Length: 379
Image 1 (tube, rainbow, N blue to C red):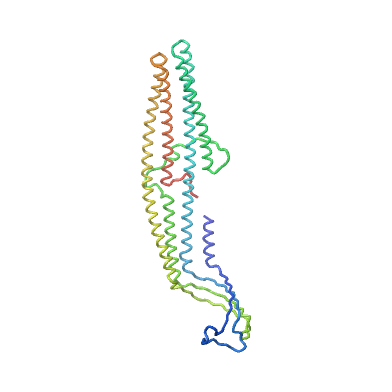
Image 2 (cartoon, helix red, strand yellow):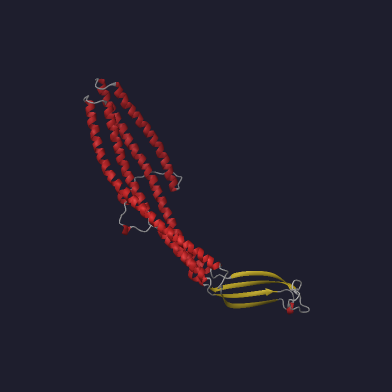
């Protein structure tokens, strides 16, 4: 904030800094091109000569800069600042989604590890049953095959986790090794869906500031036709001994106006007006697009909440089915393939349930991004 005030103060001063001008000219008075021209030729006075000058001009009052230009630059700076804050929000959301991807992989690893451990425990029990002839060798092989497949899945997930961590480091802009902590709780990132409590997206506020800047720019162009108060100090060096003097100086205070500038001002006004119209349309188009995004994101958020509840019920049912199927295997009422299928089904349902929880987490992140709520206060 202090830097911004300093820049504005510096700009306001710079508008009224003195301007230094230098000039050098050659004057040639003769009648070669215009023989009848009334050029005063004085005996002993050189008709052709050089003269140089230096002028200091101090603007005392400029309505365009005083009333509009500094305001336009101020609004423009605020607009850019808001857009940079929005970029920060987007970066935070992308980093959090990368972090979430790592947790997805970790959850899958835990589920596959648990499945592998269950198979290993059951393998020991089935080998005892095999010793007394209650299960076949092919059934033992089938469960060994399932354990091997689980190991391969774990290896693949480990590689995916490494890539996901590299992606997170890239989004965070760091090269050092990082440790992956737990996800924040739902209550930490959940937001109200009451429209009255949702702040305006920063892009919209930025466009509002841009519109104000353009309006001030238009005013500044109009103010260019108003009078300016200017003080001048000039020194001329003739170096030709005309009228027995080599130089002279003068100081003046006057008012300058530019009521007509060859329609240049009108062209600039039309360009600014056109930019104003397109920016207003950009604002309205963004409002419509954000409304669609918000409704879509909100609908997906509600659906994911319902899915989590349904998946949880499926986990309980599949766990009970796997338990019952193994009891049937032990009593010879079913083969090992049926139990392996039931156990894999339970693992998959558990994985789907936990993925749906993470999907809900992702939807909350995306909903926050759509409505424009970041994860830290803007200073």
